[in-house]
Length: 295
Image 1 (cartoon, rainbow, N blue to C red):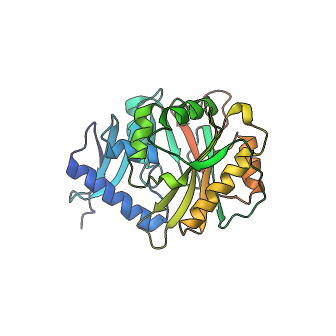
Image 2 (image 1 turned 135 degrees about the vertical axis):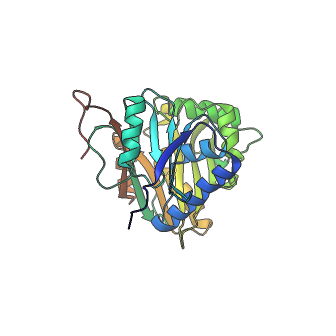
Image 3 (image 1 turned 90 degrees about the vertical axis):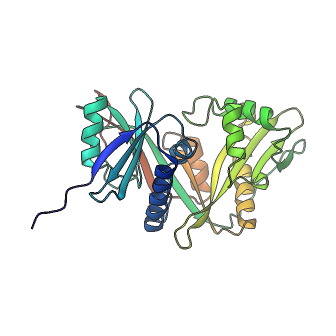
């Protein structure tokens, strides 16, 4: 009796509508199994909006889609697989083609390589009860797409000037997110003093296909650099958590870079506990000198 042929990986720069539907169905199945999102939002949006990317699909002998990974342009390129793991065959194929890749890994034991970033996923139950203070000369209100786009972009890009994803947003990137089905202006708070936006907290409600997998996220918190150190970050997180509670979710998560000591201290003080770490690992023929190995 012969064994079934192993599922093989093949790449394409463009997915047909049918292929995208197959990948989205695979993501949904994976989310039901894992109880969390199967692919980072950046890569999911690239998939949905047909952006330039290297799509890798794994199919069995019957043509059934078994795996998906997306490789984004970069030096070296960045890859993430559905579910967050590293398939040995795909790894070997990508290294043979690109020499080096940076791989987002959500597995407990990432492959050996050079860790370039570590994201902590922190979580806590709602409600979040904490004392905060607000400036008297500013108003906390929902984001208004009709008048806040340019002002918020200027605020955000200054607040996150050194951030690899959140900084340097363009208007089309913001408007695209404002058009997403999950967007709710009531969950996007800005602290407005009339002249500028001092701080903001953008929240998001996740409704995954997994049973009972509905939770809130502190999607982005920002404070104008000249207003830091006055408790506004803490106040905005608490206000965002209140909005999520009003939306009927009882758990909130957020992502924070491990090297962001101030933000980690704030979230720990507010009761957010680490539930997962995601790492960006550079893989190649050998780790770069001086870089820490993945552990």
